[in-house]
Image 1 (cartoon, rainbow, N blue to C red):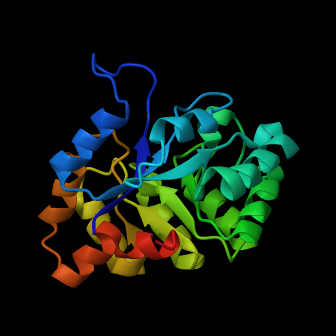
Image 2: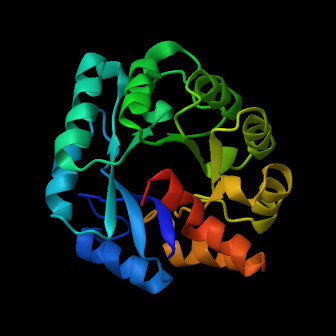
Length: 238
């Protein structure tokens, strides 16, 4: 089974194309992807319930709440409601868009709730608010929470992302939007194939193109299977 760890449902067009549920299913079909972790549009206060309504019990999509920790207790309450009543299965944090430093305690209440609920967290990574080593500091405080580092520091902080994963065992590096195979090969060599998960960051990145990046590596079938879905299935308890 091939699983995508990051796909966005959009309520606005991209390059003249709309990306509702049927359009996203077409992208997955084109890439041979079986299921995808789905997130709502990135806004100041993302509408997670709207996403749930659009999915409408379509089991191909694994709903992941995108929450802004600046909303404090309200964000924590929404996460708990989402998991217990809406079918939410994970949390996504976007420090750059929501203006908080990962290494500070803004996200601590949400991370603590993820520990309680037993769900994984995906965190956008880059060189500013969401530096990989700052993500490492956060992940270290919550060792029971699987932390999927989106983009694995792409592209100027890949080395830092790998170092973060080497230091903190609950960090997993996602291939989202990483188009150079050698970066992924470097991560595999340093932290092991079990700590790398496939993701596309679709529809901004076409999933089929991201699949080709993994295929280019010509990994042993069992290793490719772990990256393309095996490890993510374990993290999401599928």
